[in-house]
Length: 275
Ligand code: 2HA
Ligand code: ZN
Image (cartoon, rainbow, N blue to C red; front, top):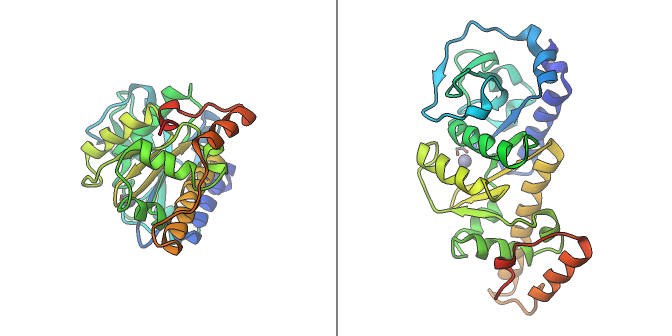
């Protein structure tokens, strides 16, 4: 089976297990899509079937015509991905209009792509453009500490970015562009897909209030690492607030953040540095 021997597919499945082991994927929570390279799709092609029917998405992306995506299935559990990929995940092809998918591998016995596929699809389109084609992954998870923060902080990019940057010194280095925030919305719908993809023009990570986090990246390590670093920052913040009864004695200051930016040669969004 060429698909299961492909290096990218192996990394994809390992990332699902890693997310499960972190506790970010209760039940069927979360979803992961990967835009395959031409070479990877070619490698897997002998296993593809092109007999499936096309399904319109309600959203269109001209720059994703003819692309192949690995996707988790709707209602499927991350816990089971690696053990039984054919039933829990699949590969879809995008049509020449860039508005419909068909399953070419996996999602056996009537599975369909993740309920958040429209969000993933629009985010891929925006991130592909914003990164000159480098971005290949969109990852959605339900990390508990980050979600808890959405009950404590004002739902703005500045509040979340500042708080996370100040929670661990590595944070500004790992996501100097900060994180966007969308207010609570019904999941799986076009409205939240459009709102998220608008923010993804500027940010590679977007918080969904009282729900979870979307991140994007060029490869499996970077994308998983971004989710992990943001959640670690949130965890430290929650631990410090809980232990301190809501009060912090000291923190990483605006001047400290500027010093990191200078020494690491990174550009932190100026508007998030102002008090
Ligand atoms: O796949 O996480 O947002 C289940 C979800 C929906
Ligand atoms: Zn979710």
